[in-house]
Amino acid sequence: RRRTAMLLSGEKTILIDCGPDIREQLTINNIDNIDAILITHEHGDHYLGLDEISSFKRRRPRGEFQPVPLYATHKTWKTISGQFGYLAEMGVIKTHEIEVGRRCDIGEFEFTPFKTAHGNVATGSVGYSIRIHGSKGETVRLVYTSDFVDLPETPPWIFNPDLLILNCYWLNEPIKNRANQLSFQRALGFIKLLKPIRETYI
Image (cartoon, rainbow, N blue to C red; front, side, top):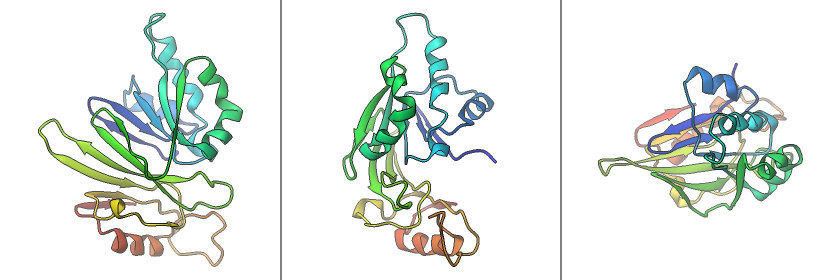
């Protein structure tokens, strides 16, 4: 079982989450460059691979490497910085604080964070609504949730995406959901609520 991560590749290459096995995942998929990293929340299985990003710096001639932009909420970066703040000091990453509802652009990708509930130990948790502009003028909208158990709010711009990617940790909803993860039964409810146009992945 590998840790959850998603790669968006076009003119820019965007990595969403960076778990402890990210080096293996990047190697298997022949990824030799990352233009930006988006972190969904402050649990280790979503950021503990950040040190591997320094390998991109080591492979570039001196002076050619630019720090990789890392996007996270204030609460999430506050947790991550205790372990990986040195990466910013060394120029491996450059942090950007994101806010729910505020859009950011990276190349052909527009992403807007929305609040997700993943328990009291991940209060910085967000999902992303991502608009992808193709080279021929076409646009695809993707909603990605990562780990969550509920949506505290449902902004209008997360409805009717072309593609919906949902966390689905349990098959049957437990009596006490201590992991604060979505079950298959509850995922079906969110699919009906958000009404993806083309496809859903769980």
